[in-house]
Length: 324
Image (cartoon, rainbow, N blue to C red; front, side):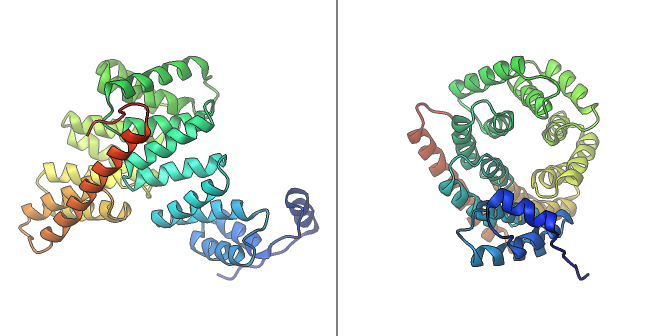
């Protein structure tokens, strides 16, 4: 559908007031497409504008919007490349840090996500959005006792200070549920999580956590329902697809498991170790052995890469943080 764009005097005035320059037509068009969720067209327009005006005062904001378009289109690698460049150019760009952590987590690059989130926390130690992303990143890793204590202290401190009207209050509570379930008291964690899920719009991570707990408890039908609920909320994340694939594998539906684990692999741009491993298991059950060797080679490569990332993390940290 053809779009018609009108640059009004009000828009010109607002643009000049903010950026002290004449409006950039490509970015105005891109912003319109962005608001209509036409992320592919928006990305094309942002790129054209950036090629024409790479040093424009609004270029960094255009880069962030372009990265978000790539994120929504499932091109996580391209989004990550742009966001790393942004942070290098503007180290205190909070929104770039937040989106970068999310993109890394959704590619199952958990160690990199943790490192970026940890750096962001050093720059924005009181920012609840940064704190919640740091906690989610940390809790996705097998932490050492030192790191667990660090995370626990942070959750306790922030929970005492944050108010219920904060937009990130539920995320902090959700992180506390996650930590409590796997390290302290399962019953209290489930009770608190149930209250969180009963609210109008619980955090996305709360839905993922509830699905995971159901899966651990071998309540496959309930787990499948929650993973489906999560998938509808966030199509960019591989984890609901992976969770559904595990459920179907347990039920003996190997064909569904194979299809869903392959979809999880694609969603993570073939960076998810768990998804590739499950795909191999599903294909083995189906006795489709022709591609298993190729997937096994990819799995071995990613596992070796992860070990290297962990060793680097330990070297740059003041103590051992993760325990693979």
